[in-house]
Figure 1 (cartoon, helix red, strand yellow):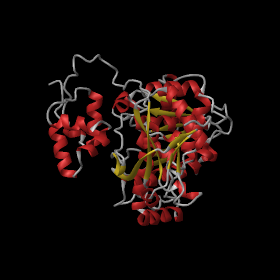
Figure 2 (cartoon, rainbow, N blue to C red):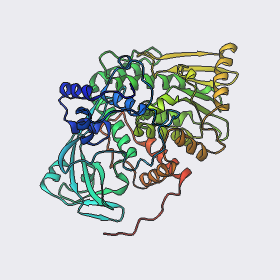
Figure 3 (spheres, rainbow, N blue to C red):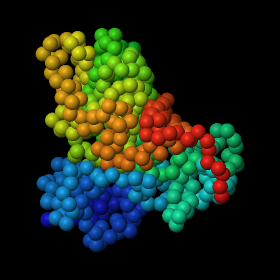
Figure 4 (tube, rainbow, N blue to C red):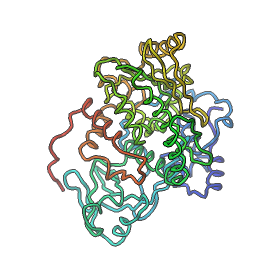
Length: 470
C-alpha cells in the first residue's frame, strides 16, 4: 500500500461524535469538500505528515496504527519535518457568516473545545482595525459570560480574510450597543488560532475542575514540603498545572543553592506542553525568580524535540513551542534544541555545575512528579554530560538570540519573517482583546513577553499607526 484509507474512519468518527463534515474539516484545517471526497473514496492521504495530523485530530491511538506503509514514490524523500510556510491563512476554512462555532481539536491533554462564534461582514477597515456596526444579534453576543468570539469578514485581493476577537472585550470601555473594533493584528492564522486553542483548552479544563482543583492546591499550599498527588478525577490540564507548580516550587526551594547561572533541562516537545510557559500564571513568576542574576552568566535551557515530534505537530502547535523558546531567551536563558530522540526520557532538572542538581519532572511522567536533589559527583557528571552534549550539538546553535530564534523557526518549519511581523503586530495592540481570560490561574504575561522579544529580535516594532484608509 502507498496510501491510508481514512474515509471509513472519518465516517465512523462522525457517527460516534455527531459532528458534521464541516466540523471535522475545521479539526483538520481543510475544506468540507475534501472531507466529502475522502468519505466517497475520491481522495487518499499519501503524505505521512498529513496522516499523523489526521490521526492526532481524530484521536486514533498510536497502537492501532500498525506499521506505516512506504511513502508515495512520487513524493521526494524528506527529513520528516514539514516544509517552511508563511502560515498566513493557516489552511483554515472560512467561518460562514452568522452564528456558529469554532471547533478547536483535542490535543494529547487538551479536550476538544467548541467556541460560539458570530461572523459578520466588516462595515469598514480603518487604519489598523476592522469595524463591526452594532446590531441586535451582535449586542446580545457581547453579553455572553462564557468565552465567545466575534469575527469580521473582509475580502482582500479576492480572498476572504477573517479577524477574530473575544466577544466581551469591546464592552469593557463602552456599552453593548457601541460598534466593535477588531485589530487587524487579530487576523485568524496559525498564531492567533494557536493562542485561542491553548487558552480555550486550558481554561475550559481548569474552570471545569474549579472546586476540586482549589481544594488540591489549598492542601498543597498548607503542606508545601509534602508530596502531592496529581489528583484523581481531574482533567489532564489540571494535572499538568499541579505537576508543573509542584516542580516549580521544588526548584525554587533550592534556588539559593543553584548559583548565578544554573542550566536547565526540560521535557516539553510539543506546543501543547510548552504553552504552559506562556499561559500558566505561576510559570511566569517562576521564570522571573529563576532568571539569571547576570545576563551573560551562561545560563541555558535544553530541549529535546525529535523530528518525529515536529512532523506530527500542526503548525499552530509549532508556533506555540517557538514562542515558549523565545520566552526563555527573553529572560537571558540561552536555548539549545537537540533532535536526538535518545534524550527524550531524560528527567527535567536544574543543574549548578559541580555543586548539585535538582530533578523536577512532570511532563510525560504518568501522573506523578519526579522530585529529588543530589550532590553526588557521579550524578552531577551525568547531568553535566547531557547539557554539555546538547549545548555543543544544538540544531539551533548561534551566537545571538535573534539568530537562535531564526534557526529554531527553520527547524520547526515556520517562516521567520512572518513570525517577526505577526509578533510585532500583536506587541503593538496586546493580546487581551483576543484572549480575555476567565481563570485566575492563567495569564498573558508570558505570551506578551515572548511576542515583544520576537519583535525586538526579528523586526523593528512599528512606532506609528498606519494612515487610515477605506
